[in-house]
Amino acid sequence: MDISAFEAKLNRLLNEISDIPADQGKKLLLLTKKIKPVDPKTRDTQTIDESLDHLGLIVKYLLFDVEATRRENLYLRRMLESRED
Image (tube, rainbow, N blue to C red; front, side, top):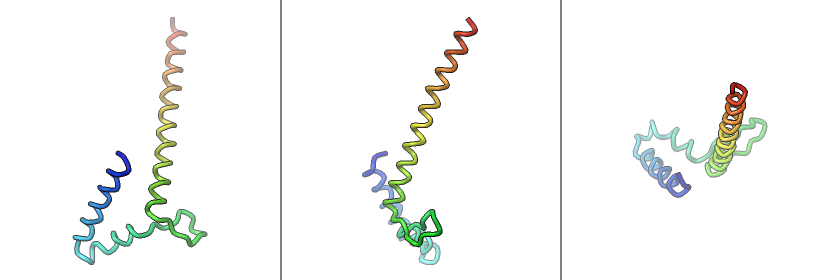
């Protein structure tokens, strides 16, 4: 999913949240404005854009790790198969 598609879905979600009755939707609307920082020692808050950028970076690292693990597994399987011959 590219950024523009994600932003469109996020905007639709925000519109749906605004249609929820006030008592139920208030907490959700507050979450869309600011996200608490990971480090409780600092009082700064992160914006949603910053949090999404950080999440995107984490996902890229995880995908890299998965691909590296797959390559390692394939290499090790080939080594085992060659030893059995």
